[in-house]
Image (cartoon, rainbow, N blue to C red; front, side, top):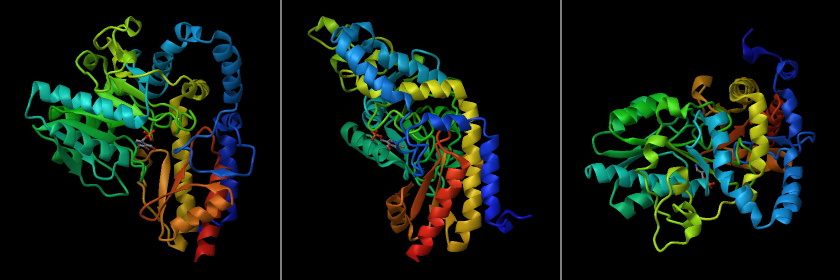
Length: 417
Ligand SMILES: Cc1ncc(COP(=O)(O)O)c(C=O)c1O
């Protein structure tokens, strides 16, 4: 029988069966709020807090901060950005140790790595003055590229994209050339959920002699990666989305070992210096990943993500991806069945191999629909033009929750009409 002909009640049966068969179902209970009736479709923007985090935070205040005081820096905190970075690298990025560090915000880390890469490229070849970036990439990425280009006399090459997809191999091939210094790419598009082909796009950038910097915000913790095997140069990603680090938790940066000695970043702070406590007259960058730090590491902001890393270790990123695909496939089927007749179209790839952990549904009423849903404790988010983003965080979202949320979207659309 065609999916569109399935009677609506059978969707509940299907969702219950998918939950019953879900090997990761038990992990949902590890998150605060999962026991309530609130429906959360925005774990790709701000993940739910793991339950274990409350105790970790309390313990930190009493035992570590309160008990060890300034000694905490020597005993543990100075190493935390590298220890957690290595765990993210191993569990989510396919990165060997010594290449990933927790630092500043995503925006600041992208700035530092993009500037460092551009400077290194134009130092070896002054003709390489172009930065390639997608026209529909996240605003911070586009704004940074424009700012750095103005600062360094570089040129921006925009890759025009369909907003329901992202930068693919053909588009990138047409944009790069002998003048390309750096390519900045989104692994999963924040708007459409388009999943770029990591190894293929990295290869295309390299064949043109460019360095590649990946924005992994919407894939880290949800889509498996193999940064070392793909030959990626640089990457940055958020930790407050699928890594559940909490509002404003600091981002991670990946710099391939082969580049670390030749890249110098522009925010020359004491924490990135060769000998932090010698307080010397001049900045000399540290060896390895420390040189990409600038100021005091935000230790409190690094606590919560450790609980998600424990869950990631237990569940495994491949199983997480399998559930993510099952969730988005189910959401697409439900959207076709109950939202299509209301005039909703899919503004994301239909093929799960080209899709990350969220889908976007398009309808002119979606801004008002989103506001109505929020009032009723159903939480997706809205992105222009007319896009309702459904983010399905695999560890904390069930199929029944997904279906109930989609039914609420249908009700809200009918009410707005
Ligand atoms: C794809 C992408 N890149 C960059 C950022 C910027 O991150 P931050 O605000 O933490 O600097 C975000 C934030 O949501 C994002 O989704």
